[in-house]
Image (cartoon, rainbow, N blue to C red; front, side, top):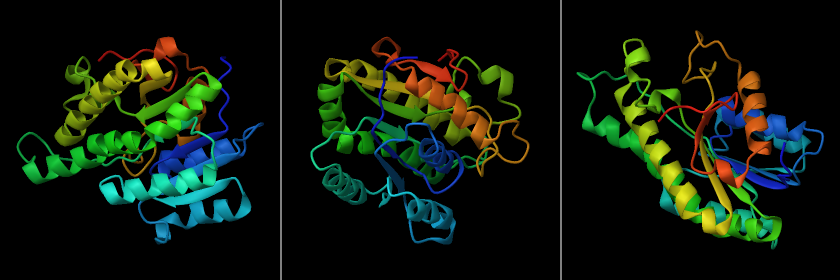
Length: 250
């Protein structure tokens, strides 16, 4: 384990699935962060009620409105978070929000491809840009900060032959491959600022995206990913790993 101390963090897509589990796990950790910014597109929607209940019980959880496809929403969220931080930096950014549509090579449309890219690639890029100064501030004070991009094994070009027949999902695959490249570029471009960037395969998880056949619970997946997060070093920046800390081929 490294000495990565996480006092402040933000999670996108935190009202359900893996994102919500991240918030829950951080809250009940032995030394919970001082401020957990739980971002989601519509905090007032019925699907966000569990997150709102969590925030009511824990003063260190702050629900933030953030639509990763809306530049104005992203900018406003960063302003709100900066006010709450009151001069502190952001130690960890978890780009978790994502979408999957079950299209094949023959049914894939341009409209769907653009929508999925907007959420899965452009969103993490814009969110990271908006929070870059806060991440940089944290790294300057604490030695490092981190960007944790939730990717997928389906974005691995090396693994296409093994699982393509069961999971064609063209736009999702292409978007996650692009997210992996974004993570690699962030790892290279931000290393001078001591900001780590990694792409992480969370496993096949029982979520709205993963479905009921998935072998992993959100709890098991996130417990594993937290081990990855807390052990992050600058040497790992720009890598692609899974929830068990194993390297994944690009």
